[in-house]
Length: 277
Ligand code: UTP
Image (cartoon, rainbow, N blue to C red; front, side, top):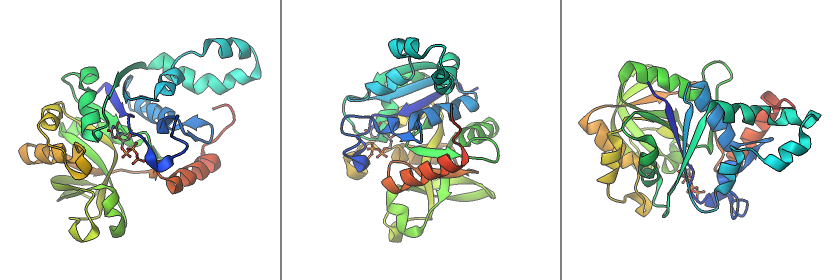
């Protein structure tokens, strides 16, 4: 059974400067809740109570968010304002949080490898908190993926069809369709130009990984952009064993970009926001 969810959160968030100069991208609020809190709620909904975060310099606010703010909480105790803390207090009660630091930002693959010390030798989920995923009609995306993992017992990446001109922003897969929404991955390319892309099926920020991925990342040379890419390690895993790609149900907002962030804010304000959450 999968219990742990890893949040790589050490990136610089350069697309969101200057907001991210001294503040973690993961703490940007969508309406009144930081991005990472949405991610932890999704993990908890999927039954994952052990939250592991890969942080870096300037990321202390994440740890403080999932802790008691003693003086302020004393101040508002017994007032109407306490309701605003109900959601995050539930998470603190139900989850355990552990942290490790990525010292040099050598890419997502490297960040996941840095999390090995918190995960150990078991399958785990990965959430990139700047991809906000919402499924108003049923299970959250991680929950959907956990169900699939229980069936296939191999690594699973969440995918989405994107316009062909956008392939250079994503890892892109090619594979054999085994069900309307599931592919067995044959190949993967990191950020291909449209003319080199094997499809328009783009990997988004949700993964279930089996622990053999760690050794595969460790033996992966830096790839595109000089970074250690999770896509390259997953490609090896797909060749040696099995990786599935899953077209999830729901909406995904790329909150690492200003446009996606605005769309998410509008969507959440109109559909999800309730005072006190
Ligand atoms: P991104 O490339 O989207 O994040 O990485 P970034 O580097 O922070 O953003 P930009 O491109 O400069 O605006 C995807 C995820 O991987 C994490 C990021 O925090 C983000 O959640 N990451 C990336 C790390 O933890 N370490 C890294 O070295 C790189």
